Length: 235
Image 1 (spheres, rainbow, N blue to C red):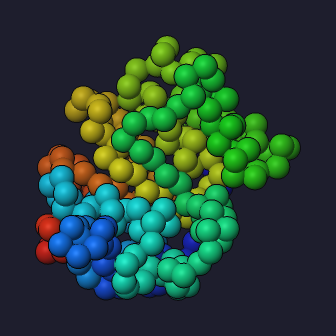
Image 2 (cartoon, helix red, strand yellow; image 1 turned 180 degrees about the vertical axis):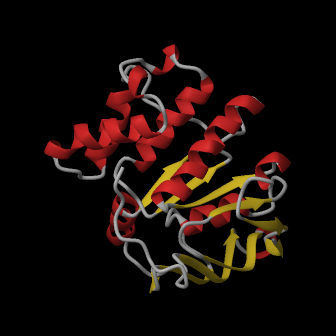
């Protein structure tokens, strides 16, 4: 699976600078993030860890251009994307980012192949390339032999791997995953983490995931710990 040009290792692919996110106003205000800072180099597998309500999913949404900071800035490949229009942000997600959610979010009546191919349609990939890209992505996650199966015919781990294939088929630079193993048992979770490691090592993709699983923190390259909206630890 060929991927686009990657940044030199010395230049961060994504940065958060003093990012604050507040929901509501006055006494009802909830401060989900309080001046978060991080800088992530290309080709890294990074975990955001913390308890529920710590701000890790909010931060992931900021990095994925799904939400805007109340204050601070997000830089992607050196460009400040904080003030980008909805159209620009949609284009960024469509071309450069891959998103994986805790629920697999597969279309139940579509086969594994059709789910991935549908994602490529949304990404605007030319019809002449969609079959090649979809089959390559499914092959990478080890599911090409089962690409005609629908979600109810697949295990939980296989469904998550289809979701990964859909997220990487358009060959993004950055993959963002929110609790990608939370619904899986430990064996299936390790299968998913192996796919992530392979994406980093073989394809030089950058992956940021949220988790509270200690086993995953032993596998990743870097961990950011969040507490009450602050990044309190980096390792």
